[in-house]
Image 1 (cartoon, rainbow, N blue to C red):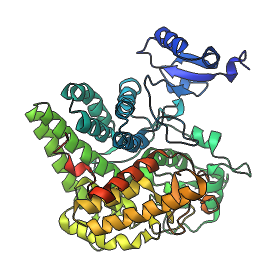
Image 2 (cartoon, helix red, strand yellow):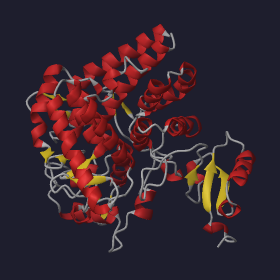
Image 3 (cartoon, rainbow, N blue to C red):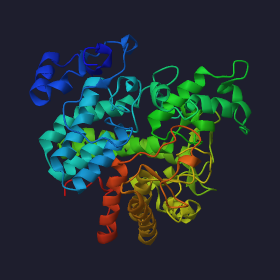
Length: 476
């Protein structure tokens, strides 16, 4: 097998790097048999010229989420890094952030993950929060100044079309690629040999889609998905919420949505940029970014807050209306400190609709998708608990954290490991029979579950939990 070049793992290196130096580094630091399995080559100037997909080179140490996710993932790494800082793995936590900065410098964005087929999309924009976390622990102004150009570049990725919707001034998720996503064709096949696209094609052929236009996603004459369906499926994966019905059927309207989550993250980024510049003594730039955050806040409340429901809803840009789909991202503005006290109180009152014995269900709708009810995810629990705590709802925050910890603990005692997601109603990780779409496995590890468990254990003991609303006090 070693003599067959097609059996080797392709690792692509940026043209900005010295391929020979990297090869010599690997030869000096790894077993010769391992090196023989690597086909190290330069990344082509155009992604269309890539004939074999492979890994993208990262120079430092990082932690993968777990299970089938054995690469460096964008927003997963933000949670993983928090856990590493919490658990006193300082050098590794800093290295995780450095790899994200390297991706921006050499590949143009924080990638969905460091494989060649992810070069067409990013992940929820949390690089500024990763840098803020590092600066909180190190207080190193020189490092912060070196990181700032990449933080700015990652932010601007979201601030030009097609990610920017110029009419609303809000941003959206939008993959640059076309056709089926490679990871679906390569890794999301069930026991029948069906991949995710086969399953949603059959679903769209017969399902009651309510007021959504079937022809946007499904070609009945060919019994096939449309190009628009593939574009939206890819773009959904940039959001990290793959898959639910939050952005229309199977999220196949996501390109037409301004999402609560993305625009909250960008408001956080603008506030962080203001504070970074202030820390570096650049007051004029700091004022610019604070004004940018203020402008986004005005648009945010106009488009996303639903007074009658007492929740934040995503906004459909074509229909010019909020989509009343209750979802745990309604807590993100509280996590950020973007909600008003009255809005926070309304959201806290409505938390009961998501509450289950094992924590919070992601939505109130059961669809067979992993990012809907009855499933519970660690990152969304962190946002909800931290958001409630920000506005003084400590008892409610403690109850949610306790329920989620009890679920993870009791399941760990049965299986001996932490998982990617849980059933919030039955308080178990055995979810495969309920998953009809996307990938139907539950991955072990799992990076963000580990991190949130550490955060919640400390919160229940100390009553404190760091959130972006505390960005005025970066350094501990």
